[in-house]
Length: 434
Image (cartoon, rainbow, N blue to C red):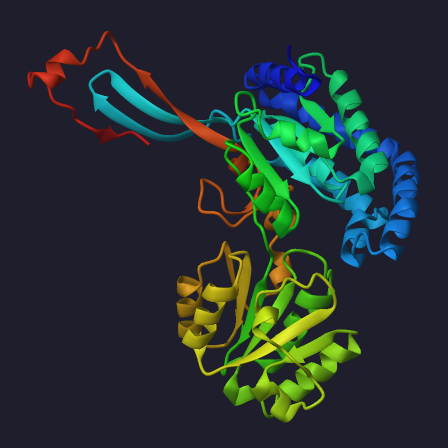
């Protein structure tokens, strides 16, 4: 006998088949309905979020959640504005489904096309980030995927009202099937969800290392995501130090609990004596605790000594570690050992150094003279993101619409059979069409 979750997964799978046939106008109408529904109910959403925050304060006081988790949980007017704008941005994007990506004329009248299509059913497990729900749902609607969402218990009230409003909006679009958006609540649901490889096509975990590791170790379903956000900024000997300071401060303080906030600064040894003390002063003015290696402490003695453990730590708060490197290649080597493959940046005015850094650093995002905080689907113009992938699968970096599609091959013939080709009587022409 099927469990409730299995029935939900079966129904989501059936819904995904109908979704794949919807035209762009229908999907855009659905997105407009979702944006309007959330706009009309902002007050109720914030009220439900306030309930979650009240409970989360107790968890924070008892050290059951971190301050960064609490910060992620909180919705405000700015987050609500971005949430609604993100949905509208997705609406404006090109439909990613049924695009001809590649085509080959195999022989006269025998044409092969590679065409984009939805993945199917996507399971997303996320922690205290209620704004994730409209992001994922808008991307799912436009890319014609059904979703099963499991949020953190800390955001249960907020998650519930957002999911219900989105489902209500979709119910107003006659062509839309039921069971496109599905919400789970308990930890036991996660374990059962991970067994649903017959119905769920992709799992995306959005959370800390322990969540991602657990998911990867307990499912046969393909997993896409990232475990850590250990981002670096390398300040090169040819850096503009004013740019370096502004970028480092922004990358650490603009939203320190984000996965694209910088955690380690690598500084060329030629800059340690004269520039490092200035940088530390600016960090400390901004409320940042600074750790440094032995060389840094020679010139800024009050710094706490950074250890090897710090190089492998995602702080998620107002703490930064600084390490001295002898040159560009030393910086690259450090990043490729201790980085998480998320986003890393070089500050330099030397074009050759920038090119080498960008080619050698093995990360989803490599930046020059720009804050790591730009690593975001909304800021990239993807409309929103379902998550950030550091794996080398079909999608890497912020995963937007295209990352939620795969492709199929469509072959059009005129009665063609294989035998003449196998016998050598006919040969393929293999002429690219697209």
